[in-house]
Length: 405
Image 1 (cartoon, rainbow, N blue to C red):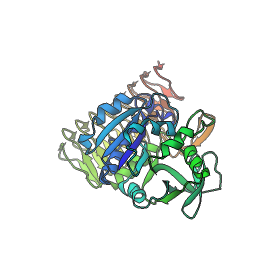
Image 2 (spheres, rainbow, N blue to C red):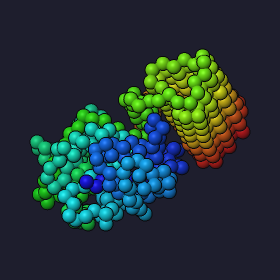
Image 3 (spheres, rainbow, N blue to C red):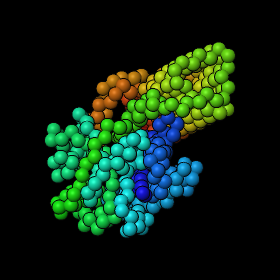
Image 4 (cartoon, rainbow, N blue to C red):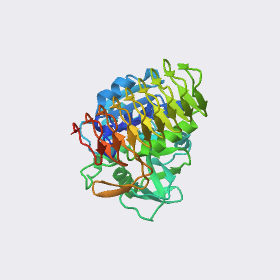
């Protein structure tokens, strides 16, 4: 069976992290979300993958190449304009053989485990099948109405209390779906949505079924959702290895992974689950607490504490700092005495909609330079290529190339 992975979008709601990379390349447990998806496909024996790319496609293609290093074969198709999921699937039509019985479609920015995909592969039927999960809070998701297992309606906007059955965006189609895609009307937001294609199939009397799953499916809608996804993967990862050099006097507790050529210096205190990448220099006397991921080529100096955070590659974090419930993008230099406030239930407005956050510190994009003794207020974001001089408090979001003197 072939699989089409949709990976062309930017992920606007994950800015500033997606200013320099697509959402599918955001790291969870030091691996891009898309790598987790491909790994789950490979474990189900699906190795023939068509990757639909667009935004920042070079970064995806450079990382995955032909897929052989990941146990799969990847063909790339570009969606030049972001015209919706149905349009994206249509770009892969030339690689789907009309003689194929079925093919799989899924998103490259949703975290799924192998059993999630297996649940659909083992139970699909009809002209098309979609995978669903039951959720109590459905705001922002599409839901389905059904009679037994047959889907009768797909609701994309403000479903209210009509259904708790959420569409995951994972589908099994026959090649006949391309005929319906060609007839799919454009939506109000100017896109061709695969959910509209499915509704058209339902209206034409075709049999669309739903398969429910209780296996892992996480949609990191907003940047702060990566922290939950990261903690989930770290807690479930059973293949953590201690490599590198662990000096005498280091305290390790719980599940901890340390990459090659990394040095953990004496007096450092680490409580897992924690993953630390390759070529890092940590300590002495650093505290790293649960649900933290540290990328490759990162240095963290003495008396700094990090908790429930994602630190991406090539960062330098100097002494006497505290980072909690935060995401720090790549190639950031952060001076001594850096402190991040954190707060639960922050109100953040995006596109006119108010979102309530879990406990959140800050989110940094890439390539920022932060001086000594800087305080960041809870929920504030820093874009890319910003400079903040010593002794400042960052009260509000900083846009690209901002300078705070």
